[in-house]
Length: 115
Image (cartoon, rainbow, N blue to C red; front, side, top):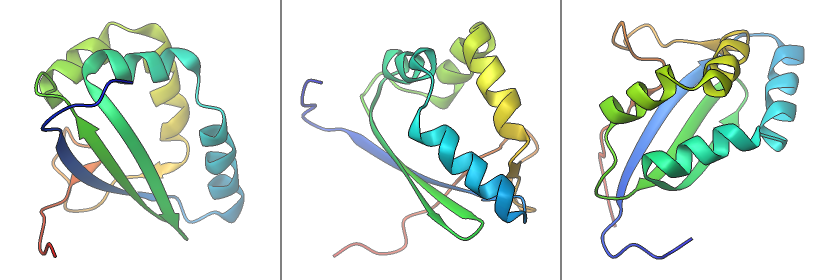
């Protein structure tokens, strides 16, 4: 991965369903994310991504290049059968936040503080 001079960062959140077994299964899937999904992320302009979990709350940190947009990523995902299959599988585990937009699974967080 090449270093990017001015990467942009997004922080997103999402909840998991309140089932310990489903939460464990979700974690297992993310220990071996499908190569096609990883390739799609990189092709869309994602430079780095981390997902943190605490009980049923997820927090995703994405560093993206200047060419990245959520709209472009959605278009790419819609035409990628592997990504669609992954997203369908993940729906089994994920619970949208009540205040997320209708077309939004992961809700983008607003930066509140920086030191």
